[in-house]
Length: 228
Image (cartoon, rainbow, N blue to C red; front, side):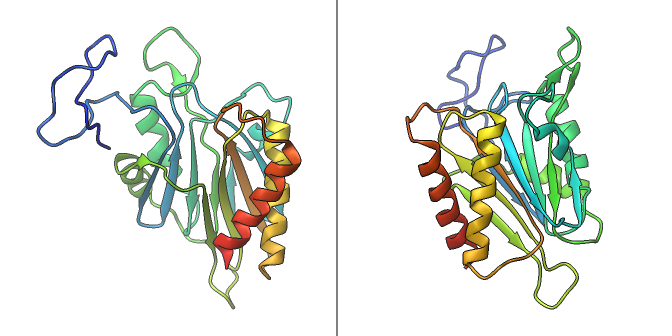
């Protein structure tokens, strides 16, 4: 990850120092939503404080983790990362310590690293994911200029499933994110992919004023386009 304007001082303010390799100092993340890829892993990193997310699950991908925390009414309100994998679960085991080392997570104590990162994960494949790929994806993460990722298993195999991630530029609660995710799944059907699927929708928190119905229709169109 790079920061064109330099590093940050110990109190978090921007400094004039520019690291020779262009890498942020340990423990510092730039603001905004980041996306990184490495091997079979795709990782969304949330800004400080996390993001609200919801999920729609039809059938089942080969592996899921912490999706129950995305249900409305649960104690945890925000996620700190989301992991998608073409292989099985496992990449998230590299993301969790990476976040904890930087103090990113649900705070459980006063100490800097007394946090529990909330990291839902979806896996399309039935193999074993690689924690090293998850960590490498975090290190490679850059500002996300897109808004949808869809992983589709190979045709004619038991791994013919869909795992998808959508960024929704709106201020939504978990129920609203879940509704957008459910509508996005309709885009898969329109693309001819009526398959077991899991879709996670993550809201940026921006108060755009866009009606929920319009957000749902847009999500279906975006996922359909990504799946074709």
